Image (tube, rainbow, N blue to C red; front, side, top):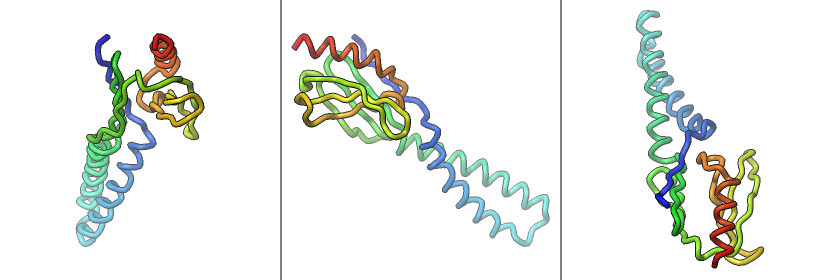
Length: 143
């Protein structure tokens, strides 16, 4: 099996990066253009708005975007540029689905039945949680 990399834009997270950047730039633009003509102020505010959204998007991609990479051997969970978790499938005894508080579904992998676990954020990253869980159950039953 080839390595699968799944990631999608999580809109609430993206907004949480864009909003502060946009507000900060709008405040700076308002202060800087206070004594200018109305047309120039409007142009500066519009440019600041677009730059704030662009800055927020870049920060989100660099710091907040979650990606899951997996293959036959194991998986990695990456947030921005940091690897949060890397595990091999052989370490796990069970797999289940778990609904999180944000109406997403995670694949929960247990090291021991009803013991310590790791969650793969399936819905948030665009992975089909049911397909992933079913394929993991097949792998785990072979061990």
